[in-house]
Amino acid sequence: MEKEDMFEHVSLQDRKSIKKYLKAVTEGVGNGMLSLADNDGDITLSPEGLIRLNVRVRRLRERRELHIMLDWKEQDDSATDDSGTLIITAD
Image (cartoon, rainbow, N blue to C red; front, top):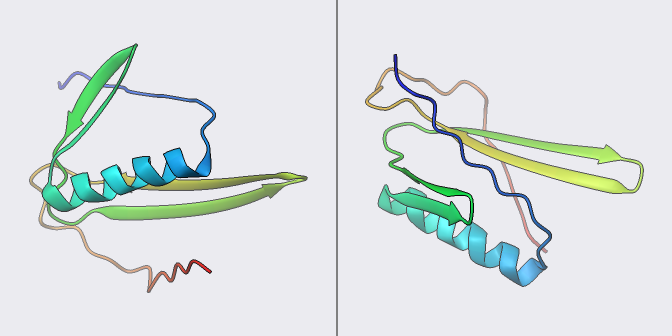
C-alpha cells in the first residue's frame, strides 16, 4: 500500500500574492510538474492525463469561500467527463 503524502499551507495573502501562486499552479499543471514547499515540508506533483476540476463557492454571512480542487489518478486513461461546461469570467 502506498504511503499518503500530505501538504497543507494556510496563510493570509494579498490579491497580488494570490495571483502569483495561481499563475505558478497553472504553469505547473501545464508543464506536468508542480512543486509546493513551506517551512513544514514539500511535495512534487506530476499531473497528466485527464484531471478532475472541482469548483465550489460558499457564502457564509459576510465570509466567502472559493475552493478549487484538482485531482487525477496516476497513469489512468479511463476517466470520463460528464459534468458539462464550466464558465469562469473576470471583470
